[in-house]
Image (cartoon, rainbow, N blue to C red):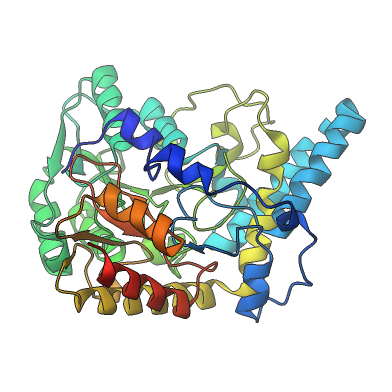
Length: 421
């Protein structure tokens, strides 16, 4: 896997910062009240965002903009806390349960199975910090996972003495295929493998792993194992969550961690951690909730950005009103259109599989004669297209068609890329 550094992550997509920000001064008119929301109208959906309408926003997933219902919920909770802090805080448990209920409905899960976090990385840290491993048990992950996952697993190994190995699931991401991915991962799993950690959609290449098929393979592995030695499947789901029409039952994993501030367009600094094998993980932080459920017990206590956490409910409701399947189809339609168009440009090399079953909303490519940073800067300055650069040692240009972009804007991207020099 291409390596990644902290500076690269913190600066992901920030290319030519001074020049870029100079052209991105917020327009006061963007704070105007949005038009009435019609979830069946994509124009109305886009109108719920205060994103600069002069740009095509193909990097909005990096750290999401808030749609109007989420902005209103954040402001409502903030006003409540500012007006009568103590009494409003008394309703915090109720607000958190409303978030769990909305998340459970979206995931097809039980609300008590869901812990509330600040990010995907926090969820992975809670799992790695609390996982109980017996002597001799090991962990398998992949070369393609995010550096935060690799670092969390390094800390798990340091704490427990477990061996962590990395499987290479594909050599050329554009040519990745389901059978090879599953077979390579199966070959890395040994008789004492207790945890298998994968990322649903790779932020380095856009490859979407066949998690359901991986889960089926692990069911065969576990068929003759006792419960304490069963291989558990952990999924970093952040770039599949709310971009792919699937719940946890569809995936068949044991744990799913995801930030809600990307494709769900939820409040920044929020996330969820769902699990069905909580008996294998000890809580890492003291919970401030009465531990009526494993999800509550696993939720870190302390004071958080409450107005953001409590507004996650509105993010799920906004997404649900539009329709999980409609959103996934909209993203897939645009991503396929973009890949098909880019594939026809002589100077472009696609990194993301064109097969919709092996990709989601991320589309990555390289452009002959230009670094990814140069390409992204030109797209911004010359064409008013906002894209990003993957924060890895082998960077690529990264586009993310979503509910805030249109097929027509996809065509603008294709034309602009064909003109880059």
